[in-house]
Structure formats: structure tokens, C-alpha cells
Length: 145
Image (cartoon, rainbow, N blue to C red):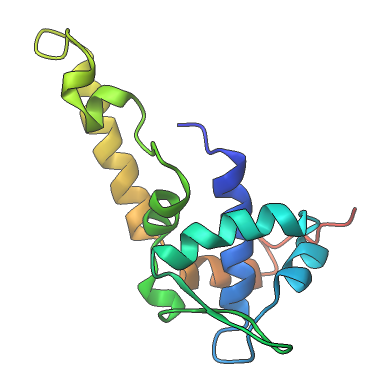
């Protein structure tokens, strides 16, 4: 499974928002500067997160984004689904009619099983889990540009 740029940047953005959970909203400008991501691109990434009910926006001078739910209630699978229109390994897993060989394909069952394992893996991790990893000095590496 290849994680696209939109998902990678979206995870970075929502993690930054999660870091500030319970505090003032985090602006796109703040995330863009801290994560070295284009503000225009971030706006396109955060929109689907808002529509999926993962983040909430606050307008105004001190506006920005907050999590819509606590970080321990938002799984990485939810984030991936919000940001990737086709989060499955192969198209036939989600849409068996997309392939005329689905009924007789030896590998179709493998793709389905692997897809379920990946969903379970991503679904077992929450934003809170990643925040713990980020705070663990043995796994956290400062990124300097």
C-alpha cells in the first residue's frame, strides 16, 4: 500500500492539531510554517478532514482548527479514508464488479485478506497513540530543514 502525499501531509496536519487539543485553534499558517507545507495545499487537505467530522473550524482572527473529537477517539484509518478516495490495495477489493476475473482470481482472496489486515492495523492506532510516540525521546527525531 502506497500512502499518497495527501495522506502523509494530512496526518502531519491533524497531528499538529491534535497536539493543541483542548487549547486555542491551530491556524493553517501555523501548520504550514511548522511542517514546511504549502498553506494552499494544506487548505485542500484539511477540507476533507473537516467534512469527515475529524476536525472543526473556527473562523475569525484567532480562528483555525481543533479536533472534533478527542485524539484517542480518532483512528488513523478514519484519517486515511477521509483523505484517500481509494484506500484499498486494489480496486477489486472494494468493488468486485470492477474486474471480470474476481470470481476466479486466485489472488483476489489474498488482496481481501491483506486489505482487512491493513484496515485493522490502521484502525488500531489513534492520534493519541502517535502523540505518545512523538513524545517518546527514543522514537522522536527533530526534523530540521
